[in-house]
Amino acid sequence: MQSLWMLAAAFLFSLMAVCTKLGAEHFSTFELVFYRSLFGMIVIALWVLLKRQTLRTQFFFSHMKRSFFGTLGLTIWFWTLGVLPLGTSMTLNYTSPLYMALFVSVLALRAGRRPSLGLLAAIAAGFIGVVLALRPEVHAGEELAATIGLSSGFFSALAYMQVKGLTKIGEPDWRIVFYFTLFGTVCGLLGQLVTAGGLNPIRTEDLPALLGIGVTATLAQLCLTRAWGAGNMLLTSALQFSAIVFAAVLGLIFFAEPIAPATAIGIAVIIVAGVSATVLTKRTPQK
Image (cartoon, rainbow, N blue to C red; front, side, top):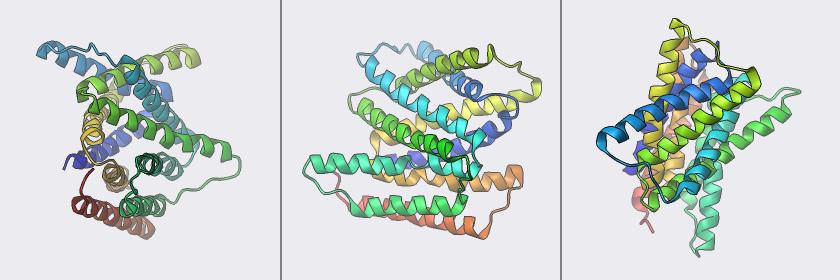
């Protein structure tokens, strides 16, 4: 049941994508990373003070590794949204479950266990559904950008592995998310200062998009951390594809983007893959 937190995270990340698309008309990649992280850092810091918790940790280096991989993957993804077609960028970002399946399979083999072939098949089917739904295209001259974009899923998968490790050694969800948002805030601000010399002014009409990015991203990170930390890693990977379903529906609601027949078929494949992964996980004893 813990892996079902990924459904909540996927829905919230889809809402964040809507807000990001609105904010990208006026703000750069580094600014979006900065504002995305700043809200979460402030809210969690205030919660820590009110609850008299502590941010002190014995695993600072592990937090920095998780934050580095996560922020790098996020920045690359936001960058590809500006230089590649939306469907291509989303598909490249959602290769992270495939990398995760590879990591988990290698770890299982090293431990003398056979990987779950059923769950691996569900993840592969989910990715096929993503391709059907988004119909990615790479045009001439975009090969390098697509190759760079492919690394966003790789770094995201490395970040999720770090989240799993931090949770197993007892680090709470909020502390993991705090250091990630702190890292993202600093990197986003420094990146904007280096590339543009300063932040763009915030207009009144920009506030809903920026607040939406901050709120949804913070809640989504907390749900995602809970899912990766306490759930079955392959099931969580399969459920991650549900973000495409939510994104298609929200695109229809907010931007009047029609759902084509191929997109509907892809969504159906994603749903079947997620349900199959859930059933297989319930039937498989956890080791």
